[in-house]
Image (cartoon, rainbow over all chains, first blue to last red; front, side, top):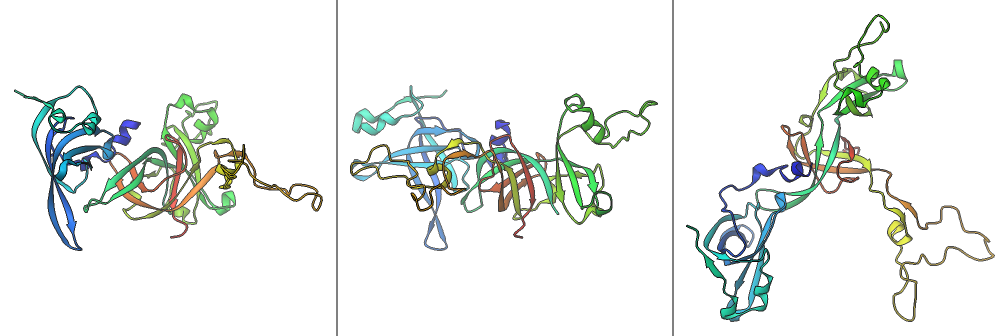
Length: 118
Length: 221
């Protein structure tokens, strides 16, 4: 029964989005409103530190380092029509499902070992 | 008169094209069958009886099977009627004046609803057991500080002393809460999936996951 719930309206899923993994370095193309009518695409580039499943509530969090070394995290709903495109730049070798430890690290120690997919 | 029975599957959310999220309850509704048409002449009031939830014949009592026309007619039982209905778990009545529009065996599905329709949904609320005044009636409880102890969720005074000499009947206190019928009114149908018999209803619906809900036209229109 819960399967029915999760797949209730999954036909609306944006199939063109890539399969994300925790640790991926991605750019999210997000449509945002500017003023009343105008729209533009905002780019958010960073590391996926968390993924949550759950049908239409599926979401992921991207952590990026903004100016002055301040970390900014943003959570996106995977099924949202506002997400235009997601680019995956590199994959990382990670040993955790949630990379919360990155919050306490800066500079060199905040790097992730790259995982090359052949 | 739109009428349907369903099973509450749980809550989810849907997006509109601008990306605004609406919280919805997914209800698996129908297919239902009209099992009996009651009229003023025969029963004293007008209503249709609707059945839902296909099951095995053996799971029903003989009385239920007979009512649905599932028992075979033979020499011993010449008056048994066959009604062309499946074995149905749940039977509920809907009052309607338009009984002429219905006949026994007619199938009712989510197709009778349209996106944006307003509906009332009745069900049995989740049982809360013995609940205190704060949960049951929204009491504020007592102060947590200024030298108080054991007064956080206390009901306060429950009446006067010798003036009345007793506590009034119906005084709001702790007691059993939930597990009673409740109708959520004027809910909006957000999405319909007629292949999978699913309805997405805006907001919450009474009952736990897997409980029976009764869907009707909104009384408020």
